[in-house]
Length: 90
Image (cartoon, rainbow, N blue to C red; front, side, top):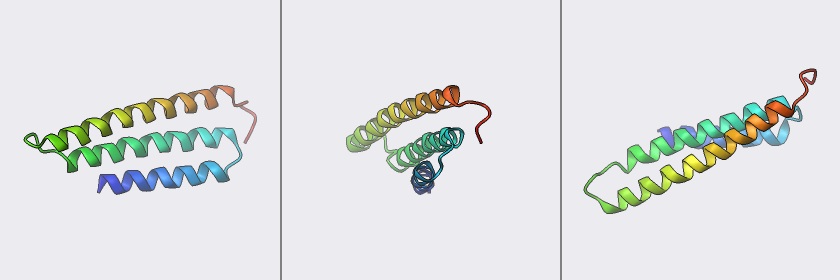
């Protein structure tokens, strides 16, 4: 369930990013993408949680590393957008 919630949040935020023109709103959309990646990774880790199966360890580790990289990149973009946005724009 967390996986689907995370994927839905990523898709909704990506759509919002393409439709919204205000950079302040884009930063919020990027933050939603980061939250979706974290939720999706948590869902996948919960689904592949079997300590005796090597495949589950490989998939879980890969998902964790990719989620961390995407979350860090998205957070960096959101912070950059928030800092470069003039406060008088709507």
